[in-house]
Image 1 (cartoon, rainbow, N blue to C red):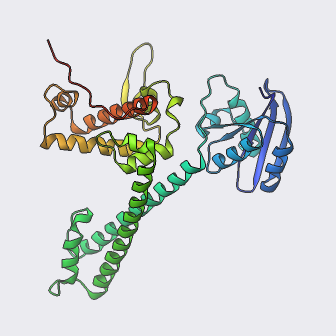
Image 2: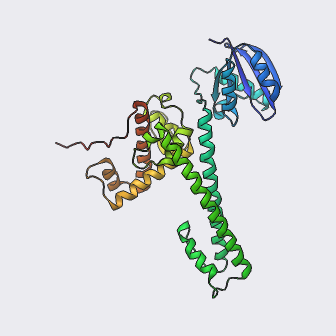
Image 3: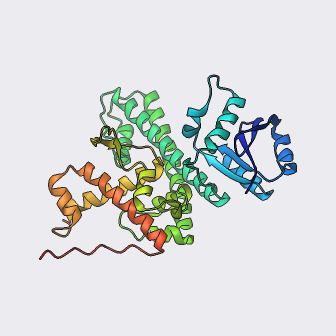
Length: 342
């Protein structure tokens, strides 16, 4: 049991430290440069070090663990209520130390270097997809200026090429050249996206966790790698409902006086996994419109009385809970048996 707690406010070049005893007595306040920080911590007695979960926090957490400290990370929104009147680095470090002493405080799991590497690759692919979408929008808007209405979606690029290459169209040469340049850029982005997708798929085949998650219908290599890269170990959650709540797939509550009021999904958790699970669930719902599910199953009953988007979000919630159960029990996905009604 460490007898000192150190709150650290991280920055690019200057770190602010606030050291207290476990009961809250202030021991020191220090302002250190980036080079001085690790040297000071290596000479300091092993302590409980608490930082906000920001960009470099996981790296510093791993470095501090190597030299004997215990490290915990707190989400910034849980630190903010403890900041006193004026916000500065010293006040932030003090607020981190105060927040860490709260008996019911929730902490962020420290990511491994491999997890962060997968996250970087995932973000690189997402960035390229966003850039390609922007280029496609610019292409459609340029043609729209001349009365050419093109539906959204990359499936219509062939149609755009025919319009641009048509010598009978009234598009000026300057606009025609610009459209060709945009088409070339879109092709380059598509090739790079396919390369990133291939890398992610290969990584998903190497990981037992990703392979197991992919046994569930509606979950592919990208979703499986997102779970591995962004989700903490499943034993951090007491049950599958807690994991679904962490993803933001549960209704927001506005309850008071014993009266329960539920709103839309909170969207308060990990956005990437939540988005991919909803996409996968929507694919299963769309497939159900072509190949109806088993009569009497949960999906069939929901589709009979609820809108498709609501069913997809509810199904994504069930998928998240099933993922938790699969990983905790170390089992592949098993299709639930339909209960026989007496």
